[in-house]
Length: 608
Image 1 (spheres, rainbow, N blue to C red):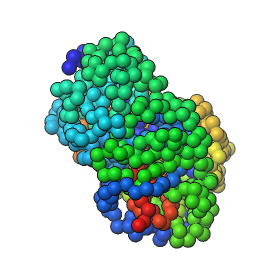
Image 2 (cartoon, rainbow, N blue to C red; image 1 turned 90 degrees about the horizontal axis):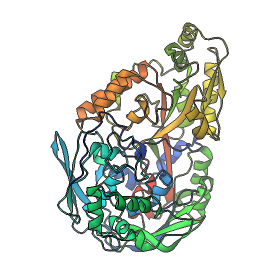
Image 3 (cartoon, helix red, strand yellow; image 1 turned 90 degrees about the vertical axis):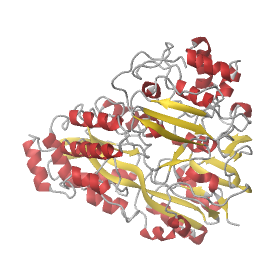
Image 4 (cartoon, rainbow, N blue to C red; image 1 turned 60 degrees about the vertical axis):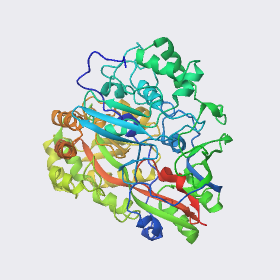
């Protein structure tokens, strides 16, 4: 292969962080629900201990349809890897059509899909990973899935607009990929293989990245791109290897725009082949209403359990009624008292699941300006008066009786390493309100009575309004004047402009190890508050540059302790999750990961 970059930068943005750890959408109007719903979870789901997909015994696809809704947002298109199309709403559909070497299990575990292929690290230093695609892995049009598809995937995250391979992931990219060019920064020579149609290829890392397992994901079809610009797949592979910009600019133009769709207008099905258990149903997109997938007859793995899977574009507050009416079969409703009460009224016709998720609530300080920017004592005064336990007891425990105050950021209370990390990084000083200590810190910080603290969040959100009301009732006693500044424009304006003292929102997580570098390290894209700490920066660099799990754990402890000692912000709780589905469905399993309950929808089946 002829691609070769002269040098590599010492540092780069956290690879993959933008793709899988981006800020969550404003959380649903989470309010308490009754604890009785816990008992309604299906026994089958409770008995499954494997976080990955299990064999359900499906051997052929049954006629029928299962209906689900991720929300009212319209489907955007086949290529969901551009900033304009990347969203959980879109990927809920496209992930049903995309095969990959891995996926996230219900607890964030990285699960291997050996139906698609296998991979292994054949060397740890330097890191070299060998990938082997299944011999019978094909696109739904019959074209084999090969090295060419993954070379194109690498090119979309490596080649600059100037016709070079990225040196530090900061140049202008040729392809409009949501992850930028971080992949090319780690693997500057691209994947290696014997031929364009090879089923085996290798990634040679110039430097190790902790989350290397998830950097190689589901590709888009190289043969379609080649055909659309009038060349063969082999010629496209050669153009990438030679950095032939005359061809690559045409390829990028199609990749960037050729798969975009107007509502209700699917591209020619020849342009959108599937590598997963479902594919687009011809004329299956009704604008403003729904899009339907149908079982992929060319899929070589376990067939989809049910012939059709329909995604309805329906507002969240209509989902319970739609479930009752049979317009939806599976929902993830807002976790509110009213919602669960409505579900309970449906009786045995509906199965309800609850639990914690990998999405977590937090209060972040503004270090760019304002009262907390340069005063640890001011931040401590606020931390001592925030009633975290009361917030959890009043708003979260009635939804999930296992909920606890969350005392970490990179691990969750239901994960095995949580207690180990917390015991090494946090002494519990902010677990309970201590108004006396808060007042001492308030005075030591030189703050004046009535010091205004604007807490911003994406409004409307009744649960977050209740959180702020609890904070105000406590912290105003110390001398603060807590002001609720929730706004529909919080993410668009207030957060990026630093127009707040404290930001209240949530991060959605999965099974990544190093994505937090994008949030807490100096000058990283998602470090909205402008926090900077040399100890944290060094620890992230160490963590991100190794595949050693013991180093990951030790550096996580260092990071968590420093974030507590300097008070980056205050974690609150893991979000409760609620799922509900028609009781005549089998194999529906809720998940804590951001992929949502639809993660194993190809296994959903009507009880026989």
